[in-house]
Image (cartoon, rainbow, N blue to C red; front, side):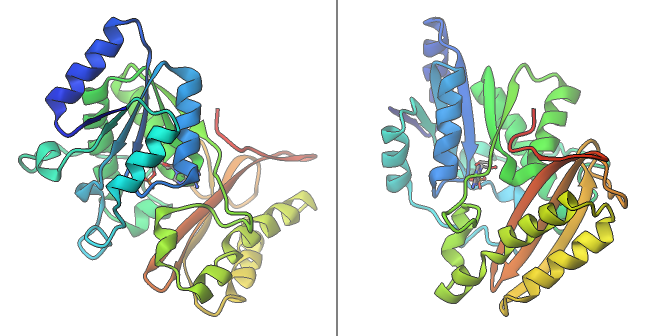
Length: 293
Ligand code: AMP
């Protein structure tokens, strides 16, 4: 497995693989890898011959009071995990390599960043779209894999690729969970033992929403109220948001119908955890969608 720190050596290594006729798969991450990330590597492997993993805690997607400085980092551990999982190259640049100067080009994201995390983390998706665009230009992958755990990010990236004609296919991967349902996240290390025990209410509330909708409920407000009740059973939980939006444009929906995203963000102390499910709702049936097509 190769490790590169500069853009130039990354381009050279990937050009070499491509010259051998290999298809390039890409998994962008912020490191501190867990099984969720590793399953993205597995999926990339299935669709390509040379898997590139980037490990970069991207400062432009963090707000001034967010956890950029304290975000967990452990390159040696990540390196061992990537190698064991069969990645071919890790690109792990310094901030100065990615941003020798502050980028003067920014993106304006209409509609898709209005709600959910976009509303609570101003500028966040701008930073995501900036770094992903740069990484796509550096790696020039044939396919790139993103997790549905960050559903809003996935939907925005799909639209970025469509609107800007990036020659890459975006593949979505189902959310990988701990045995008790908590979505895996690098930020789960922030949780105290009590908070970790209580954090199962996120997934429980999503499951409760699904059960309610399966039993015929179509009113988004009532579903959200029930989810709030489930989360309120955790004394340390502080709800940032619970929203139900259409998958097509991430705008809120009152009467559930079609592809809907039920998403939430909840604080446990300084840890801000997110989770979601996507349901295809019709008059007669409700189907969970593990990974968007
Ligand atoms: P991050 O390192 O948190 O920026 O995540 C890098 C990629 O891994 C993103 O595409 C995430 O959506 C994905 N990811 C993070 N956690 C999970 C998980 N529990 N299951 C599946 N994918 C995940």
